[in-house]
Length: 244
Image 1 (cartoon, helix red, strand yellow):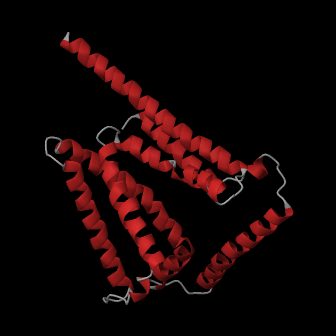
Image 2 (tube, one colour):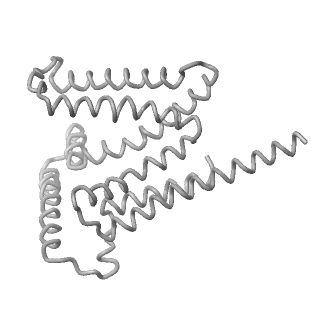
Image 3 (spheres, rainbow, N blue to C red):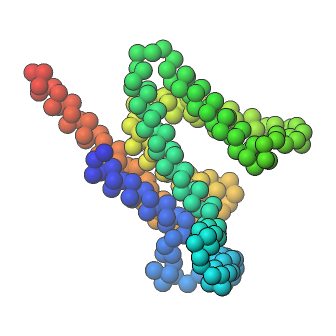
């Protein structure tokens, strides 16, 4: 890990935070939102504050003892449980890229190594997904007869084949050339493409946060790639000098 990697990661993280609305550039720049926007903001704020306030009031009215402390802590975390799970995703992706890169290099002389690694990943995803289903349904397999419909089967096939099997396989192919850091930074640009496709296909309006966050993320990708290219060139030059 080089200093440029940390700078790129920090810039990408800031860009995602801006896209998610952690910073309101309309307010910072003094841009007055439309009445409809203000109503939406008020409704969303109310829906977020109400359950948090209820949890806080309930926790305040409860006597904190040795057993109640953990319960009150878990109750206060409940409103943000989804955010905490989502926060684990980039760590999982980053770790996966590092391990894939390691094994692709370790078995570089093995034929079909990328296909084998991809198959192992798919088996692991399927097994863990099965465990999750069993956990949710208390150890039983639910009745999935309702899934046997053309549009549902099409969605499952697309998700299972294209966005899982094919995506994992091409990740392995890409990590033969790109580093895990480059791959992680590229994945950080996912919200940018989601916003652009949303504007194109769903006619969503991009706000100032979308543009500033998108620029920050893409800048992180470009900076990280250029820094790695510079390091690789310096390493090649050093190796060439030693050989001469």
